[in-house]
Length: 271
Ligand SMILES: Cc1cc2nc3c(=O)[nH]c(=O)nc-3n(C[C@H](O)[C@H](O)[C@H](O)COP(=O)(O)OP(=O)(O)OC[C@H]3O[C@@H](n4cnc5c(N)ncnc54)[C@H](O)[C@@H]3O)c2cc1C
Ligand code: FES
Image 1 (cartoon, rainbow, N blue to C red):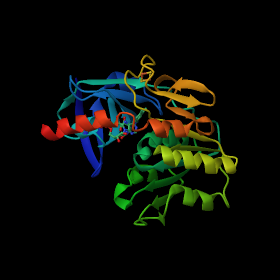
Image 2: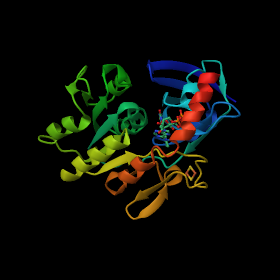
Image 3: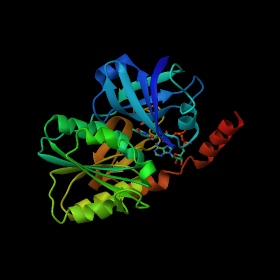
Image 4: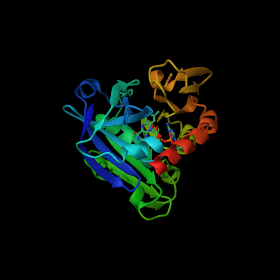
């Protein structure tokens, strides 16, 4: 069992949880994720490792469906049945002078450890972060600790530029050059960031989050098309070169399990 030692509500949809998991903590690097089961009957869900502190592993989750909402009902002192990791390939941290991170919504969570590692290596870090509104922005305080510059976009204009991250990028690229970019957020955001970046000759790493089951390359559920090849996001990713990702295929598959998810949600309502 894996004890929850701290919990923080970041906004009405998103929580941060700190779990005691020494073996995971010992080997985790930026870009790695875990797969957890809340209880013995639960489904397995992947979540990115956002921070490590000694034996403690932080995760941040958006309460979207059955399992993340069930997780949200757990509190400090409760324990999770399974907490397996670190899984996936660690992010490729490049030897560069400056990096641009682009986060959308809860994508700010998986982006955090990667940008923090760049900052630790002395790389200049610029962050463009977007969310539906001021209240949906997460982790700004943590980013302020190490980012050289932060630009904010909200859909409703309640903080920063009114619009999408791509609106900020369009302006930014008129005067600024970056060695590399990393974009993590909703698929549709990553797709359009990659299209824009390509026009400016910029490469973009993206983090893909197809539905995963075993997380070890056995079930094939997390397959993604990169260039003309098929990869498994759980063992070959989750980070991939954005220019080669078939976003349309991923977008089409996003609602594949919609009916099953609906049935699960009904179970939670009945509990
Ligand atoms: C490698 C990896 C890392 C991830 N890291 C994080 C993280 O740090 N924080 C976080 O909040 N989420 C993260 N996710 C997404 C998270 O795993 C899903 O949101 C979760 O599995 C949903 O489970 P559920 O039972 O609560 O919702 P479900 O009932 O299964 O789904 C509810 C809704 O969420 C959508 N959904 C389901 N699975 C995913 C998915 N994999 N990606 C995007 N949308 C999904 C469904 O289309 C549906 O609309 C990550 C996914 C992967 C593959
Ligand atoms: S989750 Fe089964 S192969 Fe990746």
